[in-house]
Length: 68
Image 1 (tube, rainbow, N blue to C red):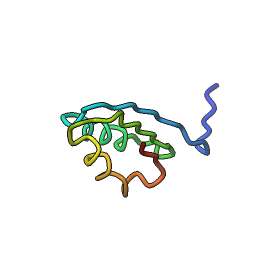
Image 2 (spheres, rainbow, N blue to C red; image 1 turned 120 degrees about the vertical axis):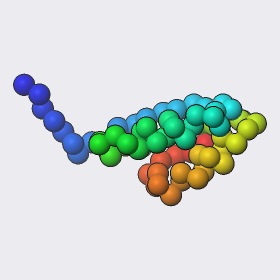
Image 3 (tube, one colour; image 1 turned 90 degrees about the vertical axis):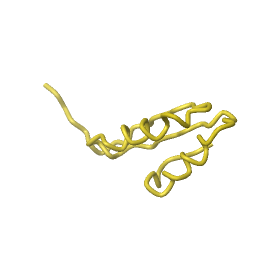
């Protein structure tokens, strides 16, 4: 028997460094899932490219997520 409990949020953790070429695709992939109860934690490890600005561009769409 499969029991579904859609009342719980899941936690997704992502550590990034200089990911400007693919970070938007990764975030879009997460957003495209049908299960919407999640908290996304992105830890930017001192990227020297546009990674941080791309992540911050998603901040409004990911209002229950954390950025470091």
